Length: 244
Image (cartoon, rainbow, N blue to C red):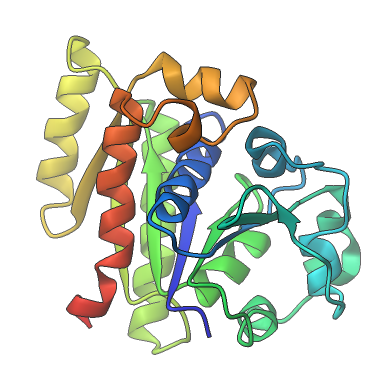
């Protein structure tokens, strides 16, 4: 069983979720942890921006009961691509704990699940397979609404003592404190979610450029502002053993 299993979720697309998922995976790999990114997004963006072939067999094959070969990005980082096969009827009808069962024998130090926006079933598979969840939102009202719904599901799972994440945090994405909207957003989160850990990843073009170059951020620019923020987010993810 992998020591750290981190799901990165957002109900709204375009908030930087995949960038954060791949970023924390890159950070953990830079610490010489063996990391596998499991892409649950039919668009398969995680494999693409990490430099892998997004068309190769991956998560859908795993959920079909087979053993796909992860794509090695470097000595410590690998990815299972997503893809349109994740929308197949059989996968959409899987028991919610199927992914948790499928990864139970994995021996990576860390698994990072990149959840899809707008597909609650695939997201639920990851939430029940994870030990911790990063809920990503930006200052857009729809993004915050989506984050609230993910938090509601996490709390419901905990109340019903279901398998899955025991801790979670909000990640404020693409923050620029020069913008009034972003400053007000940070204040609103503090008021509305006072008991939930709040992390932040500032706006940084280096993150976008790393994705366009299909290179993990800790290889592309480990001293960038975005990398610095992602290090803090990743450290929250692996601090879980001391909090349980």
